[in-house]
Image (cartoon, rainbow, N blue to C red; front, side, top):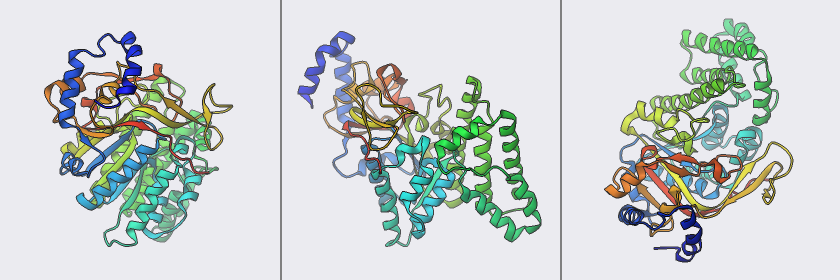
Length: 437
């Protein structure tokens, strides 16, 4: 068994909190996991076999700003492109951000760093890192030397970038000029007044609820008008993205019920947009986002009560495969609203970001048992695990799902890895992503 010294150091504490630390059941589970775990240090053919003939592969992340999760996404995407014919990388980013990044990936238009500065802010600020930039730049380099192009897609709805208004109004002006005045009125006042997505969201939700509901109604009327006149499908989708954003803001997020409704709507939209892209382009897609979004079953019932992964599974069946990631110990970046980092936490490379870290997982966590497998970093198919491992994977227990905020042990969510994911990729140790200046 690996990391003997580290496990020995943690043994005394773990036995205090969990008498079953070294029981026969755990030993049987680890032995079963050992027989099916595949090391990540070798080729990814085992991953390819797990993916099979899937059209969409979701790759989750336990934190929004850990280097290994971004480099893993690039490694998996490169494999899926070269070996499985995948051509689209999708991310938990707004549709308008995806359009801008896709123009760069396909045509070299724009600067991804500038796009990050413009639109990867606020809720996405942690995505503005070197590892993610490396992936986008690799996609651009690939397209300069290959006839079959790869594309970038933003599947989310939180920021309605200027580009979408320009594309819809430009199309109407050219193809339906008699409707331009009506569309101009429908979109009047809806454009963001700031390029900072986080700032924009705060401003949008501060508007009176009735105004937000009126905004949603106007954006949806514009969408229906385009559909009625048989507009180009991409223009319709741009208008749909605007309708999605303003509909999300129209829920009363000052109430628990409203926040839940908005969360359910958001993950449904994420699934809608992925399914639309797959159906419209025929592209196979790798989708990246937080574990809680890619899960089949709810992990965080307050924030993600009906995950995108579950919605996609209902729509695509075995054409969708989802991957969750876990880690035993290491670092991540997180954001704060104001002030200084919490006591004992180091600041990161930019204001309002901090560097968090977690020690080895306690004995009652999923990560504790996963980290006893003989490989340091490995991949595991939960669907084909032997019985002792499958029974263990089916049980819900504390699991780290950190997202973009500060995490402490009392924030652990209970997750059944076997019910949530087809595949689990585990890392022994990770480090914080390198935030761009």
